[in-house]
Length: 267
Image (cartoon, rainbow, N blue to C red; front, side, top):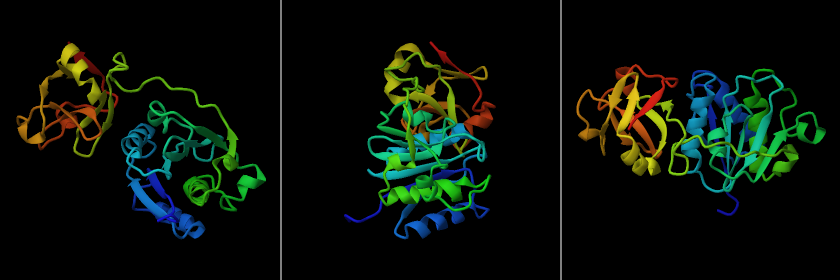
């Protein structure tokens, strides 16, 4: 077990109908044949950085110490946008500098933050000889993740940059004034809000529910089975966030809600 390589976890918007995921994994395994690869998801909606940020936040804390998490939802691929390598208490991230890491960084202390500098000879040798304008997952992210799995120092990838603290993104006991919002809509149509379960006492005292598109949602449930049929209800979901759900249905469809839909609290 001492020589077991770390996990590299992948989160992309590549989908599974094309060759992108398989080719990226092939490049990584050519560099480190013993690599352990975990797929968080490859079904992020194309260019949906907000969705990727939520999925990364919801999953990263469950990975073992030393894991390398690669997030590639990169509308700016091929442009001068930066690629970041960020280390926190138990894992390292590779991602474009486009907000994909914001939810994680808003809650975690950053121990080291690097901007990848491909123009430097020592770094250029860590990636593929030819870099395309459209597939940095294969040409840059994959090779760098595989190199990190073989204990290449993070500092070798580029220059250190200061990581400034980000404002709170979640409604919680520590940040009760953060506006409520919809972070994510899952495949069941559940509306995942940014209200943390540790804010339940705050919810109990200050708000009796939420208003979504002029519809009042005030019924709290402990499980889906106890929800009245065809009624939007509130529940604390598996990520520890308050969700708006409909038993055997879609809250998004019932309430005609989207991620940009504004939420209002009911006092």
